Image 1: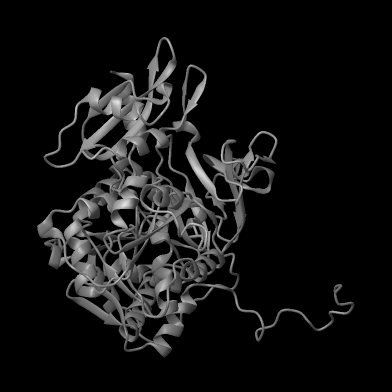
Image 2: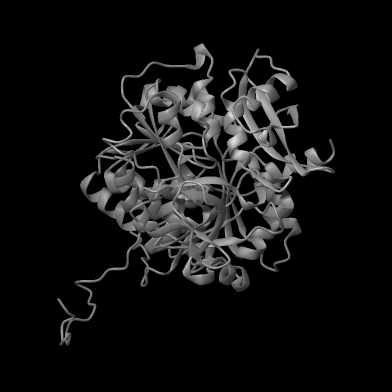
Length: 544
């Protein structure tokens, strides 16, 4: 069927075209789920009617304080209810939310506030001293207004030096009309990358992408109406993988978790009926290795998205016997969080058990519904690599949930989008069924005697040892081989293992050149999302 010959009068109109925005999910929820619980944060609970009212007052108060459409409002808060409200209230006044990593140093926070030109900073009292110090280092003439967000339940009381969050909300008009985007390409969020090499880059999200990932997530995550979602993924990390924008769509309850501990996770599942959460493999380890007194019984299956690093097959095999169904997802800050999912292949993988089942479930998988084409390509020639489960290339993707670009950095944006795809920097193979499987970050591949060694593969072998809680493998400079694998290992409580024991353990599973030549026992440095900071370990390995 060809194109219609005459499209006169078929243009976009108010009746047939509305810019996509996740704000519409909350407007709808307030109308059809007014009495359902929207947010839980310890003793704090709001219905959708109450939640929407607080969001409206926040939007109004920010506007009255001089925040205009297109301005940036920063937030430095853990996973608490004001941070959830900010995800709707800030864009509801037309502004752009810049949720900042709570673990960053003063200098980096100062840079982000300067670079993003924040007009207001919503700051949890725990981090107030850091933010105040950051403002003193800023170069901007007009410093952002600090709105202090105390958390009495956590022991963080108002300092008295700034307007508080509740005082700000009291200034707001409950009848304020939300300022919705006129164009779905308008920005909704500004998120800064980790900045482990040079200054962090500002990743800009648009309303369209946030809306579409919120629509795609329930499909991938087997969500029906009224899920209970636990916020383990930080709200500053890809805006909580955009899950907080998804919950009103399905009438779900967002359960906040300020401190990520095994006890808090088990308590939330048992007491609040949590059905879904996302988290890095370190969270899975935490659950598997929880102390008996931290565990709670529950009688339903908890659906878990895990990402951040390929989870060890041993971890997946253990946790799936405990009432958790794990789906490996993969993405980056630049893709609003998860972009691929390891969709379970019914009728094919059902026969697999134990480690074999866990191994296939640890793949990064295929494109989620909001994405278009995701594949593995030769970055030099921009050609598809053979889908044979062995040939290596770079994961590349395009779709509606890829960032607008890097703020004030057109050179980096153009490089990232070279050839019509977003270049992830992740090295992977692709199986004949099209499922993608990460081998390593490009910078984490170890080249030993001319042979490529995947740090992920070595880490997976180490994680099968019963004494190992967590492992990370990096390159150590070597005069003979150029580089050799060096393993850093955290042991489980009361467990023991020697360096030689772990080296022999890996040698029984992998080729000799892949075996660690050194094993260092220590606590591993981690980001706030649970990722191991390998750049710190590379520095340590170079001094051994």
